Length: 147
Image (cartoon, rainbow, N blue to C red; front, side, top):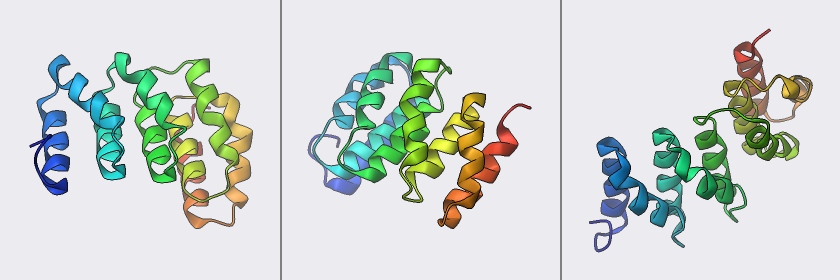
């Protein structure tokens, strides 16, 4: 299905691989995360994030530079399932400045899940965003950060 099915079947196969889990599903999911089809890439990024397999960190970091901002948002969220490090947080912090109402919201939530206290001031500043989704995410993010 992943190779020959229609788009819906291929996406369903990606989600099924996520349910199966284990090392065997990583290779096809990484392949899908690099496919040219936005829907395939997006689903694969989401599932790779859910699995949180450290070997997939590089491909998810690459998706932060995807031309599709929705896939960038998915990658930001996916990375919040990994072990926090200053390097990982450093890749996410620039998204707090994008002012598009989506990626900055996801970055605030991801950084709070990673317990990145160094982003607290910028997340507080997002409470004044013109985007309601960003303000809501910033408030939630602040509630998740350790005091």
